[in-house]
Length: 172
Image (tube, rainbow, N blue to C red; front, side):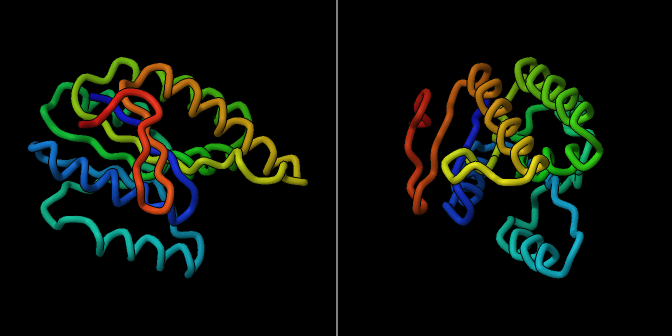
């Protein structure tokens, strides 16, 4: 089953994703997309590390996410990616074209993925329209990516205040 778990900052989406990965009954591969560019991000990453089970395989993949998913497809493992918005930011900093190419490649890799896949991403479209061009490109393309992924996964969950709400499909 392929899942997309969305939510705002500190909504509990990562915790929901980790609970689902733990109960899947398979070895877990956790793909972290963050890059520690400053001390505050280092602290966020460390908090996530402390909250993950120690037996999980960890892969740090800030750019080549589609290739990583392709290589893990059909391997009998639950793959948890946290998070797509950080991955998208990494690509956007390389330029708009690499980001859009990456989005297409990711959607294709998710569509072709065989097994349990849990994707975590920030819902960024409910706030005000950003003033800067780069911020608007990020917000617009994140929304497009979520739509494309929602079309190919079986389950979409919105997490609010730690409560997962089914948007598409049902995890029960």
